[in-house]
Length: 523
Image 1 (cartoon, rainbow, N blue to C red):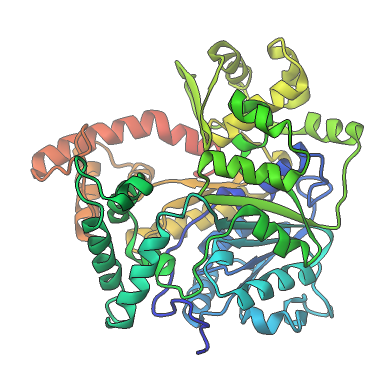
Image 2: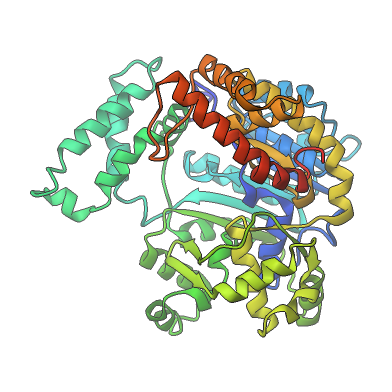
């Protein structure tokens, strides 16, 4: 096999940020499930390793958000590392480094990951987003071996991956893509995916007379239709890897256990609380004592297609008192406002509907500033565990953020400088759509149009002048300038301008103050 081990190596992957990879998010998920977090406290020094870091965009944002951390990104594609190093230099970050390396080589000797002057790495966090089920099994085993050898005892391993049964229908697409790739030009990576998708769609029949395949995989037609919404670079990486192989949860957990990695928690906050599951599923689970089998049963019942699992190297449980103290000290802040009419939270098992009065009361209590959970327990008559559930759901929905206090304030200068550079690069066509929010230790979505509006408002522009500048920038970069209220592109320039003036006004009054409060932009 060639140097890329069957991995799609003809183009770089997309650049994104995934909030579940942030240390604060990982720590809270573990804390809720009684496991010790990766750090003794927020703001403490730590070391973080990203295996399969891609172009480094997400890791650079984490480094800006956490100047007290040391970050290392590893990828075996030279293109990824070249772009990552260039970005880190542009952002002037001195707490992140990148290494071109193969997991198969690192599994035999992890010393290149050690910091200067040390002989062995001892990371508090190791992360691998999506890559585990995109590589052939020997590389996957090397990934787990590298993660385990790089962690300190008690360190946490975040691993997200495609899983069954949700991907069962799309295995047919992957097989057809493999066939088409064998007779296509690698310089046209989307062609085999498009041909395979069209062929598979023709095998489904129509809605009135579905074929046996369509009846067996009722969601496949919708899955194929959704392909048009994904970036080409994602589709190439997802479907053009020889090692592409989703796993059932127990299969991946068994492979991690072979490397001393014990399952601790899911990073899906809405799925940390069994009491939120449908009653019928809770009844089935009550008869199963094995925790891994319970996870499998939930995945089967909910047709799960993607998992974000957290493992620990050396199980370290907190006492009830220690857990309670850590949670009581946890500080949260309002991230989105105003209060909603209905509080409905999405999860893989369906929607969870919260009591609006309780959620509004909590958000009103945070309107004047961040509060520790200990101060919020009396806001609404409930037990502390109910409050934790409520806060976790609001965090998952983006309504709340984990306030970092002094640690967040220490990162504001770096984050705002980095955000300015990212906005410039995005305006030049780099496609960066997230900015660092120092006060919550996260990067949040700020689409290019909003970045351009913020930049214009900062320069004192307004009205039609601001709108026309944004209109010209978006048009130059080939973006849809504006969509109408129904989500359809607007082609008339004057109508575009009118809608952009209205959007700028709303952004300046509602969205920009929120971004400033989170530390994205200066007050």
